Length: 212
Image (cartoon, rainbow, N blue to C red; front, top):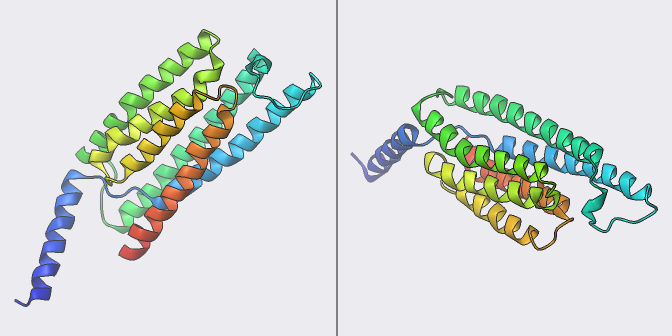
């Protein structure tokens, strides 16, 4: 065997090991689409807030006192729609990639990934509902960013390792957002929108197109 044959065998062994221990069918395009959905959702949310401020004849100042139950419900509805679109798109694109690679989308590794991702995310979701219940609306955006970041870090050991960097970025951004209460929508747009587009784009260019 030549040295090139040995290198090919090593790459194949490494690929098989990754398939058995990591879920590698995540699609970079799903990250890009999720980011775009988040930016569109942020635009609609910003429009709702602008209308709320206009009724008070005031410009946007980040004052959370405008967040009445009606406005809060509208913002939560927008967030829910963005989440549903992102999840459905992610599943569809991941299924397509898994089918193309001859892999199963729901195996033991995928289940471990899902469990490790959902534990911090569900905890953050419950904590966010508690914040809303207590009327602490200003911390909702920072909280969702921090717990989403923790979910990415926690799940990274079952998929591409660099997912943790997306998690770290959102955790840091969420902590910074706690110092700018009332402007969480902008941080939310950066974390769930811009960061996802950047990460998804890099993932698609560096991993998926190179492997094609």
